[in-house]
Structure formats: structure tokens, C-alpha cells
Length: 54
Image (cartoon, rainbow, N blue to C red; front, top):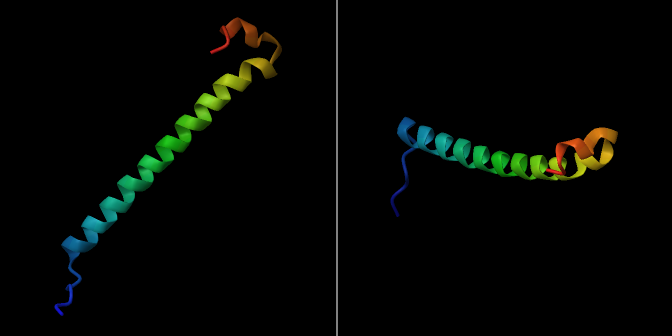
């Protein structure tokens, strides 16, 4: 069985793949938090009805 030689190209490829996947996960989490916050925030503050219930 041939072993995979660790090279800088492999290391950079893995680094960028992990970076982009984690960036996507944080983006989805941030979007969910933003949408939940925008749905609950107007009901928590007295002048929230002026925002139109976004």
C-alpha cells in the first residue's frame, strides 16, 4: 500500500478546505441568529412596532 507523502501543497489544501467549511458554518449560524434576533427584537423593545415587525 502506498503512503501519502505530506507536502506543503497538501497542507495548504487541507487548511483552505477547513477554513472555507468553517466559514460557511459560521455564516449559516450567523444568519440564523440574525433572523431569530430580528423576529424577537421588536417584541422586546417598546418602540419595536415602529420597525414594522421585520
